Image (cartoon, rainbow, N blue to C red; front, side, top):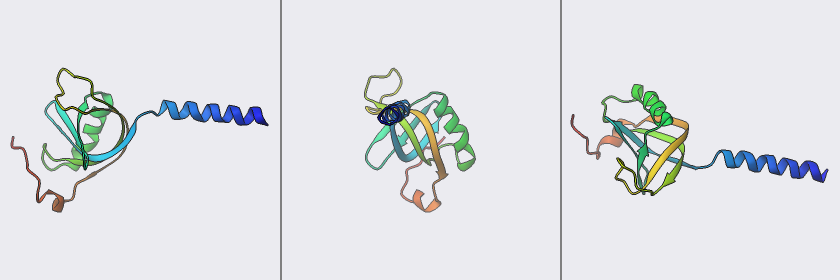
Length: 116
């Protein structure tokens, strides 16, 4: 019985290690070749990978304009290493997408919009 419990704990630990990264919710925008994830306290530069591209495709139908943000919940790996094209101090690499939704119009009342 003890061996079975130890085996189960090892398996559970292995699964947790595979899903490393933090779960973060915030407002996400992708414009031209750059993406940003804004939480209540931090703005992350998003490393463009396959998951970021997938998130962009899922977000398109929720946006009225190309510069609109969408609310997302993702898992990602955060780092502060220098990056050749991302100048934000905090960077995130998306590893998993959980949820996304359009931001209601009333939330845009105090938002500065980029012009094309």
